[in-house]
Structure formats: C-alpha cells, structure tokens
Amino acid sequence: MDLLEQTAARFAALAPACDYWTLRLVEEASEHLEVRQGVVEPSALGESLGAMITVVAGAGVGYGATSDLSAAGLRAAAQAALGWAAAHAQCGLFDGALYPRSDLRAQYRCAVAEPWDSLGLADKLALLQDANAALEIDERIVDWSAWLAWRRVRQLLVTSDGGRVEQVWEFVSPGLAAVANSGSQTQHRHGGGADWPAQGGLERIAAVGLLAEAPRVAAEAIALLTVPECPRDTRDLILTPSQMVLQIHESIGHPLELDRILGDERNYAGTSFVTSAMFGTYRYGSELLNVTFDPGVPGELVSAAADDEGTATSREYLIRNGVLERPLGGRLSQLRSGLPGTANARACAWDRPPIDRMANLNLEPGEGSLDDLIARVERGVLMDTNRSWSIDDSRNKFQFGCEWGRLIEDGTLKGLVRNPGYRGISAEFWRSLDGVGGADTREVRGVQNCGKGEPNQAVYVGHATPPGLFRAVDVFGGGE
Image (cartoon, rainbow, N blue to C red; front, side):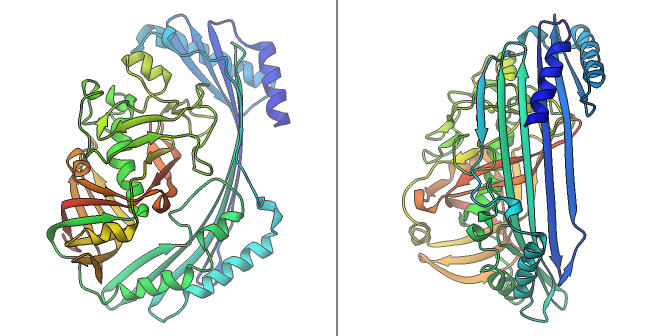
C-alpha cells in the first residue's frame, strides 16, 4: 500500500478548491492459468493502477480518472472533474449538494491461508495437468479443461472530510469443464469450483475439490448423452445452490437496484418491475423468503468494510418474511429517492465511478436437509448448475436452463434428464417458494461477471443460499 499512501499524500497537497472531494486509488494484479486437452494455454497476466477523483462543487458532481499518478497527472484529472461538475450543475438530474460526504476511517483485509505465490508456476501447472488428465476418461469426452485464476485488489479511499478506507481483497478461482459428444448430441458439465468463487488463497483449491471433482464432472457429461429430455410439464422444482445463485441474482438482485428503479439504467440494462411505492408492503415471495444484504460473511465475494462512497457496510434485510423492505441503493440514491438502502455503491476499477450494485445478497436458511425437501415432492424435477439465462428488461419474466436434472417421484430421486429448463415471473415464482434448506445446506457462492452501467462495469457479486423448493413451475426440455 506504500505507493497508494504516497499518492494520497501528493493529492492532498494539490487538491482543488471545491465543496468536497474523494480520491479512490486502486491497484490490481491478476493471473489466469489453464490446461486444455493436455496443452498449457497462454497465460494471462494483468496489472492495473490508477486513481478516480470525485469533486462536488456547488450543484455539480464531476469525475476525473487517470493512470498518471504524478502531481501533474493528478492535477489534470482534478481539473477535468471540476469541468464535469460545472456541466452537471447546468444539466444534471439531481443537485450535486446531495452527494454523500464521508469521514469514515476503516480497514478490511480478507483472510488468506495459502498465498498465491506460495506455490510455484511449475507446481500450479502440474496440478492443472493432473486435473486435466482426470477428465479424459472416455473417447466421448471431446473437450476438457482445468483452470486456476488469481486476483488481488488493493484500494485506498481518502476524502476531504478526513475519511480513509483501506481494503484488500484476494480471490483464487479454480474450475473444470468437460464436453461430451455422441452423434448429434453434445453435453457440458462444470465443477471443481467453476461456479463457486470466493475470497481467499490457494486453500480454495482443496475446498472446491479441483482434483477430486474431475472424474465426476466427466462422467456426468457422458451420462447426459443418453438420457431423455426433461419433460414439458407443470411440476414442483428443487433448485440446488448452484442454480439458486442465478435465480436470486436475476430476479431479486437486479430488480432491487435503486438506480435502476430511478430510471438510470433504462437505456442499457433496462428498468425494474419494482416501483418506489412497493417498499414496506409488497409481497415479493412466500413467508419463507428472507433476503439480506450481508457484507460480513467470511470469504463471500463482496465482504468488505465500506463501499466506494465511503459508507460503512452493515447487514440489512431487503425482504423479510416475503415482504419487500428496502432496495439496493447507496447513499446518493437514497438521498435522491428518500428510501432506505444499503452500502452498495461500487465501481469495477479505478476508471469507473461507483453506481448501485449487488454485493453479498443472500437467501437466509430455513430448516431441514436437501433430502427433506425431496421427500416433500410427489412429482417434480431437481435442477443443478446454470447453463443459460434470459430475463426481460424489467427483470420480470425469465427463462433459465440448467446442465443437470433429476426427476422426483413420490419423494425419491429418480432418473436423470438432460437440458432441463424452467420459466416464470419473478414475484409469482418466489411466492411459490415452499421450502428452504437449513443452515447446513447453505453454500457461499457468487458470480464474477455481473455487468451494468455505461460505460460498462463488470463486478463480482456474492450469493449465499440453501436449496429451494418451488411449487407448480413450468418446466421443459431441449428444443422448447
């Protein structure tokens, strides 16, 4: 953090005259290793370092970003921010005086048991070769790969009000993929952490079973080649945590983003069926639906001390006993709308300003095991691992496909089906929620490719969830 500290001190000495300013410095490093079909793919190395300056001057807010951290570079970015603040004062949708000020002093550093550099490059590639070889179990496996990715983000936010927030995150993301083919039928299966990202170090490799999972992933891809299509029907549906993640993400997380509700995203990522008047009264789901914004879950992707506006994070209920309580909106959006919110103003990098994003958005546990949920189903389907998704631009009507399906009859898992999918309408679907697994079934997962904003910002989002049981869902198979 020394360079970030030196840059912050340099900027404080030349900061422009304005009502309020923030300096957010971000240093990022990343590496991606992959072995595909026994061949080492080209490695990807990334380094990034830069600053985002925000100024509030009168009725305007302006931004200026730079990778030139010299005094001249910082001064130029500050002047650019002042120029944009003047433009915003004339044409902005809100009074810049609303922009939240922060004097927060906080630190966060994620726990890392085994640092990335504690294992050499040759050893990492040997591990991937072993996992790769374990996927090649049959001539019907026509493509197979194993990968290992690392990312570290160091961030320092300082403000003219004396705020100082230092945060460090590290992520290690392993994964496996197998593609099986027979004639005109091709099936995919993923595992080994491919849909299970988290904060941490190389200890994540064992936690997600990179090596142990390989034979299962390949065998399941082959098994899918010869089983029947998922039936087209109305049936009860059990979603495992790997698919619940995307269901929560798309049909709860995105609709509750407050800037989307205010209309900021309609040109690009759409609007929301949720309106400001719904909070406090709207039945979003059954009484089993309890959804929290929780930045304190160890290892979850967006556990943090503060957001990028300098607001301290805290656990908040968004939906309690099925009733909608608050949106996902940072302090600026809260002040614009008059609604409560959460500390979730986030930027993807140093050259983007913070906007309202999901962070750790979690479904709280219920009771019982996965077997208990299955036992309650007379006629249904269990689906695992997302394969495809589609949702309308108000985040309401959706259709999702999964990699893996099992029929359920009279409370017992039966035969495997391929290309399982289901569709519904967001709130109607969550009102059909009739079972949520207990704490022992909850898995701390997330997504690494959530896109939003103009210019686009792709961020990590955490989701911790048990399996869920939904009644009378429209399910279907391939070709639908």
